[in-house]
Structures are given as C-alpha cells and as structure tokens.
Image: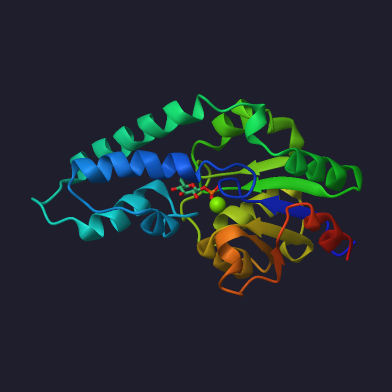
Length: 214
Ligand code: B16
Ligand code: MG
C-alpha cells in the first residue's frame, strides 16, 4: 500500500454540486448586472463562498457595496444553493464512486472528506454518504480556504495519519496547490487534470483503487 488514507474533495469529485453553485451565483450576478459564464465559474472551484463573491464582483461596475450588503448577498446565494441541495438523493452519487469507496475501505484505507464547503454535512446526508467516511474536514472547521493546506492537514489530523501517507483527490487547481502544500500527493479529476500539476490524472474514478495499491 503506497498510502494509508485517501482524502476526497466533495464538490466536483464525489458529487456534481458545481452546477448548483453556478446557477445560484448566476442568479445573483444577473441581479447585479455582472456577466458570469460557466468558464468564470471554474475559477470558483474549491474556493470559499466569501472569496467566490469577491471574484464575481471583480466585474461589478455599480455603486460601492457595503460589508453588510455583501453578507446579504452571500446568504441569498446560499439559500438558492441549499434549495437545489434539498433535491439531491442517493442517486446523485455514481455507482462507480460508491463502489470504489467501499473497495478502498475494505482494503484497509482510511477515508476522509476535505472540502471547503460549509454545506458538507448536508450534502453527505442528502446523498447518504456520511457513513462512508472515517472523518470529515470541511469549511466549518477552517479559517483559511484552499489553496491553503489547512483543510487537508485537518483531515490527516482527524484520521491520525501523517500527511505524507495521504492521497488527495481533487477537481480544482486551488485544491491541487493546497494538497501539495500539505505535503500530500494528488490525483486530479476533471478540470484539475488540464494543468498537469497533479501526481496522477484520473480518466475514471475507479482508477483510484489501482493507484492506491501501487
Ligand atoms: P459553500 P469543494 C467548494 O467545495 C466548492 O468547489 C466551491 O465552489 C464553493 O465556493 C466552496 O466549496 C464553498 O461552498 O458555499 O457550500 O460553503 O470543492 O472544496 O468540496
Ligand atoms: Mg471541488
């Protein structure tokens, strides 16, 4: 076994909540007269809610926005987003993902979540994934979001494993940077594969098992 534990990013790796983030941010951007495309949305992958709003506001040309107003926008976006999450079910997790998680666990790997999202517990509950993990490190437990390594170091600590024994699975460039800064190897999936910075690139989620087994 090359690794003792696998730490999974959530959005874009285990579930595709990125489309719900996009729709919720798009609603807010439209209201503020800001252009916001799916390509712009890629910049928000793995980044905190607050930072995401700042990125969207880079194109804002209206009256100055107060910190209180920003807070309201964040709540507004999250309310729309959580409504979409409320529609999620067990079927929103691919069979391949569920089977690979089980296979890894049966083989003795510890599994954790390392997500920037403050909605992690709700997403895991909706999709019936909570029991698939030994630890959850998420946006409610950290002070610095990816690309800072905090969320992954916290996951390793919760698992009582050394960072160098953990493999991270990520879809975001910010997440690849965060994992490397934590001293962990990274398997990229989706968007993060294009930069070529990850240690492994996954075409299919199930390839993860062979990577772990070396
Ligand atoms: P929330 P991940 C990240 O999840 C998302 O990729 C990112 O787009 C989002 O802004 C962030 O969570 C915060 O999410 O608003 O639910 O707290 O990829 O780290 O699992
Ligand atoms: Mg992600």
